Image (cartoon, rainbow, N blue to C red; front, side, top):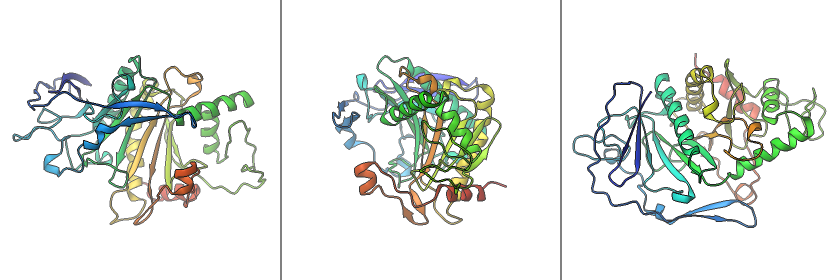
Length: 370
């Protein structure tokens, strides 16, 4: 991998990641851009104990431009974009409309390909490996910033998810605090360690591989499903297994189709993946994405999804017990119908899932590539 760092006309950082060591990226951003003005601040909610980013400047961000005005396509034929070069492999740059900025963190855009009409599932294994390298490099760079506590790399795909740019891309958020989801995971891991002496993530993965449910602080016993039941009623939730990765639908899935992908050797973040796990990730992840696009049958539009990397906060207590994993889910619950977050979900954070996790896993096995 070759890494080339440059600056855009307004001073924002742009980084090219190339598979070829002889790639030259010396194009200059010729746009007449003024300095980026942000109004991002973090406010603490005293009732819930979490934090909210207030970012009023994002009201003016680019919204569903036509393809010939896409800011993530390379600059060509006199049309200037966020990418000064006429082509690129993978490019990462500071978001012009960040939710987090300065002492409040940092937001970056990750462009997976110069091809506007491509999807992540259509990338080559070599390109996916390069994206993984870029995610890892950005995690390492952002971890060195004193204000950053946690790095979150993710992709939103589809207008149903809320994507405002159609070009295949993801984002990276560098938070100045530990996120609520990670705080809950760390708490559950501590409770499980105190009750059993074991690692919660290790037990969760192992019990999914053997079709056993697990609850924090509980030692799963054969034939028990939890909540007082002595008869095992759940089916197989495994989706696929590799030598170094395992993917399954979680026992208490929140979303209609939701898959969690774990490296079998537990590591806290992307930086700690070994060469074997890194080499196997591209084919495994591409297979998952291709299955997602087949869930609802031929003729259906591409499945909207969120793909979210969960990494250990850098300085949190219990970091060594955290497990890197990717959560992939869709808001589409059946053909032509979406899962909306209504009163219970939005008001009380209590999810109601219409699709049994076992049925979702079975469907994802049915649509495996031949």
